[in-house]
Length: 309
Ligand code: GDP
Ligand code: CA
Image 1 (cartoon, helix red, strand yellow):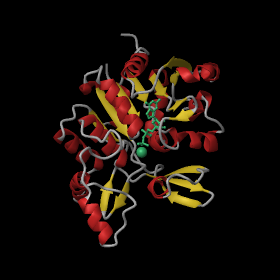
Image 2: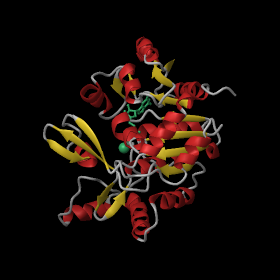
Image 3: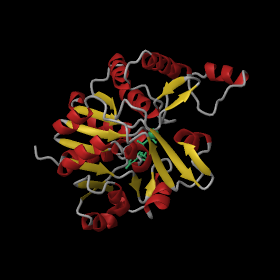
Image 4: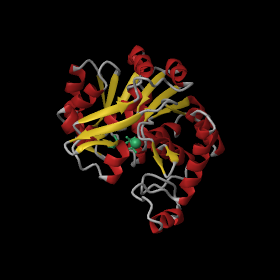
């Protein structure tokens, strides 16, 4: 079954990994967020693409949730000793990838093309596409001012309340090559249990992508990133409170208004099923904690069950 997945980093990677335990990887196209991208020490870093790449290739650091397993930090130590900025940590192994990518981008190669080469080099069989090759940067407006995404998230530890999320450049950004084709060809489009505001929002802020998803709404299923109204990790629940007025599955549905036919919500949120159906979206209640193998299998069966075999 051909499936296209909109994904951020950690939640996205875990979900795609679960899918490929059941589907042949060649059936899967991942359309990834690049709103988190940043330049560090002159290097282009794409945190969500890299989390997907490392996790799916099997060398991601499971505990930390980002970066590579068995990482060393010699370069970072040197940077610190020399008085450079160290708030965004880059390991030695990780740095190698950023060097290759940055060099290619400087030569004028599009992000999608260098991503494809790197994915192939690490043995990925699925298609990993950045949502866009154009510059798109998420910014967060808070009572303390407006920050670039990583400055808000990493440097300030996402402590400042998010009052507004801005997708800088989204208006001019076009879908990367292959993205619209994958959305058209997919028998199922899944929105991973990624943060709707800062992981999925930037992807859907690209007009061509939003329109393509909207057209295929009946084939679109989103998985809620909230369990019992709480994020498994990260600021999603706090963002739901400040940006959507609550942490129920109804609010998750509202994030994808007009775009989804079904929403998978956790058994812990079963009471919210009615709020989902009231919004014209089919609620699918199952276990969604992906660290548990049984729940993971159940989640994938539920998502794939949406399309008759
Ligand atoms: P990031 O880009 O690395 O921050 O990652 P994502 O946006 O892709 O994923 C973060 C979201 O994934 C958080 O809101 C978590 O609540 C959610 N998440 C992580 N693990 C799980 C899980 O096992 N089940 C569900 N339902 N959500 C999860
Ligand atoms: Ca991210």
